[in-house]
Length: 361
Image (cartoon, rainbow, N blue to C red):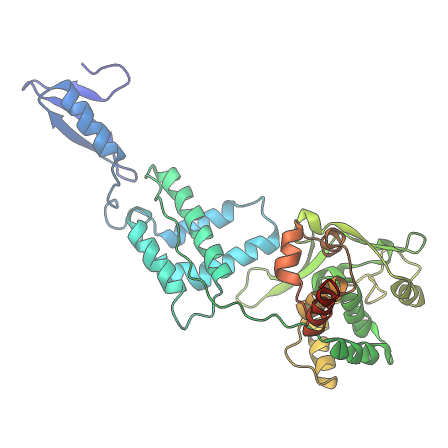
C-alpha cells in the first residue's frame, strides 16, 4: 500500500516501486529501491531531472509553441504582436523552431545567442537582447506548461561601437525650415510639426483638430497610427492605437510660432485629422516618403523621421531647455532615456561650454 500523497508501493518481491509520468508521455515510468526511502529519493531525483523528449512525433516543436504563445497573448497591443511575430519569424524559428522544448537547454541557447551576434549580423546589441528575452519568455512558458524545469540562462551580449546618430546641424535645420515654409502643403506641415515639437511620425498622423487647444496653446498626444500586417503574406492595414508607452500620453505646450501655424490651417471639425482635414488619416509611409524627397531637395543625406526628433531634443538642450521638461515633452519614461538616446551635443555647443569654463579660471 502506498504512503498518503505519494505514488510509491511495496512490491510482492520486497522491493519498493515509485512511479511518475514524464511530461508528454502516455505511460508511467518506474524507479525501484530496496527501502521506501531509497525509492522516494530516486523518484524525487527522476522527477526533478530534465526529461528527454517524448516519443518521436508526439512532442510539439518550439515553433509551434511560439505560435500558441503568440495566439494566447490577447492583452498585447497590435503593434507589439506584430513586432514579436516578425522577431519569431526572422530570428527565432529559423534557429530553434525545429527543436523540441525539452531539448533546448543552456548550450542550445548559447549557440542561438552567438548566431544572432555573428560578424555579418545587422542586429544591434539592443535587438539581440530583446530577441533573447522574448525567446526565454516563451521557453519558460512552455516548460511550465509541460512540467519541465525552466532553463537558467543569462545571454551574453557583445558590446559594439555606438553608431553616431544623425542630427541636423543648425545650418541644415535652417535650410529645411525655409524649404518647408515655402509653398506649405499637408506633408510639409507634418514634417514641420515633427521638427518643432519632437513628435513621432505615427503621433503626427493621428493628430486631430480636437487635440489642439487654441485657448491653452497646447497639443494633446493620445493616439498613434501604424501600418501593421493583417494576416496575409503582404497584406497590411492602418491601425490606430495608444502611443508607445504610458508616458507618451502627454500635453505639449506650443510655441507662439507653432500656434500661429496651427491657426492658419485650423479646421472647424474637431474629428478631422490635422494633416488631411478629412475623416481619413494620412498614411505614415506617405509622410516618410515625402520627407525623403524634401531632404533630397535640400541636399541632406541620411535623414529620416527620427532624425527630426533627435534634432529637436538636441536644439532644446543647446538652448537651455530644462531636462525634466524636455523628457515629458518627448514622452519619455525617465530623464535618463532623454539624455542617453536623444541628446547629441554639437561641436559648437561643446566649444561654447569650454569657453564658459575659461571664464572660471
